Amino acid sequence: MNRPPRPPRRPAGAVRARALAPALAAAALLTTTAGCSDGAGGAGRAADDPAASASPVARRAPSPSPSVTVAPTLTEAQAKSALIDNTGLGEQWAPTQGAATWRDALLKGKTDVADCQRLLDGLYAEDLLGEPAGARAVAGFDDADNRAQLRHQVAAYDRAALDASLAWLKTAPETCAEFTSTDVRGGQHTVQVVAAPLPGVGEAREGLHVTVTGETEGMPVALSLDFAAVRVGDSALSLTNGGIDGADSDSTQQAAQLGTQRLQDVLTGKTPAAPPTNEQEPADEQEPANEQD
Image (cartoon, rainbow, N blue to C red; front, top):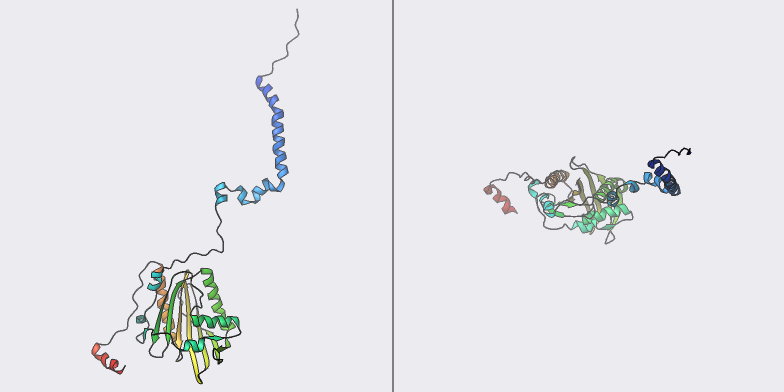
């Protein structure tokens, strides 16, 4: 008996491939549909949004805020060590015996111009650079030759606020070149402000020379006052020097130079060098001077 020929047997793998084909096609269709339904919010968002493509660890890491400033690094001990002393200023200088009376009479006044009021208040309170953000140290000295006073302050500041204060000081000779101040008794004084040169020290610096003229208790009076500020990193020194008998600008510049060097030394971990001292006369030659005092 003749039997019809048997159809050829397909390999088992081919059978399984045919059986899986519909499933694979369906899976591909689902994947494509999901991608299309996401539109710009799916694959496009991953390309455009760094947070979407970043690793989970990177997504958890906070980004630094541009408003955050570096914390002040000047310690209280460093601030005190950075202060100058009278031996580096000259033999006429000595530690202060107290605030001069002209401060209340000539610097404590009112004016209609906001920037000029800020200048007067800052000179009176001796905080033209603003409130320190960290350690602060202060030293004061009296000049026996012209009855001037010098005040040296070292402090740590918020860097952005410090730079803003220095920028404002730079404009003071223009915005407050001359104005009228009224004291607590109603007396009027003329205030003049000019820029004052400083040695090329520190990372930024500003200097002013301020004069206040008028009458106090019916007597004519004139105050001359130097102000100097020098920034080193997030720290700064400020100086006021002057009095009713004038301001020795040489002393202001010398104090700024000595003070900046000491501040730089302490911030880099060095011990500030001892300031140069004036040669002292023998004790027997000084005795007549002591008797005259």
